[in-house]
Image (cartoon, rainbow, N blue to C red):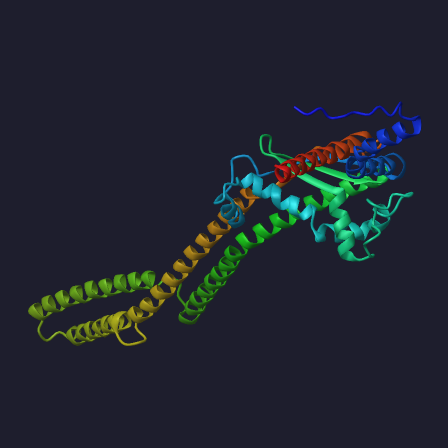
Length: 388
């Protein structure tokens, strides 16, 4: 065993000890922690505590419902039900999409100065419109509009919640009120379109049936006026009764003539009876000809009359059916109507709710600290693997 010679050089000077102690401390200084966590948190604190402008929040709640008794879903509702969405949800989602759409922003801009409402207030340039990296444009305004408007749906209650932020309480309330009014107008337009589409075809069919019925009545009236009778059956019955009476008279005259010829064969009354019988028989033939003769006979006219009557009855039935279809279509359209009911009207806030300054600062710190911790663990593992 070899002894290592040690030499005592005396106590270290204070300046030398200080230099040797400072080097490890500098190497152990948490500069990554300062850069990744502390400095961004400090910047966030400066922004949220001294720069961020207060924002007021106006909230409203509403439901989109159909009349009680249920209704058949629309084609859009049927399509969305195929992916697991109920019809009540689809109706509400249609209103949600409109509230956050360009159409809604356009309607609001007609009655409000949206750029001024969402514009820069004070020194807050990160939330107001336009932000430093944005130009004044419709796209930038729409992007800012979507940042200030949030709408959601509670599937357990079926109630939709509208949340609108603005830099003043009055602006937030006016925006929320305008968005709800726009949603109500959308529902009214959907109702009008559904009613128009459902009833329009039925109304056109009824108008066509009504015109056909009126035309058939006009033709029948013209025929009756031209032929000067109301019902050929009545005329035929009267002619039949007349023929029957004439034949009875002829039979009686023949009996009288036979009796007279037997009692007085040379009586001068026989030619007179023969003349009367011949006249009666000519009248009978004439009446028979009028009943079932040529094209001018009563039978021919009755055929035309019956065809016109049948045409009128069919037209009347078609008109009655078309009227029933119109009533049914109107009832179905009434059942399919939607209603937007306000559960809670837009509030007028008396103090700002956003930003939640300390919560935001704490969130930034916790997030960055978590990222720093993950990065430190990864770096420690890599370094240990490299030294191993």
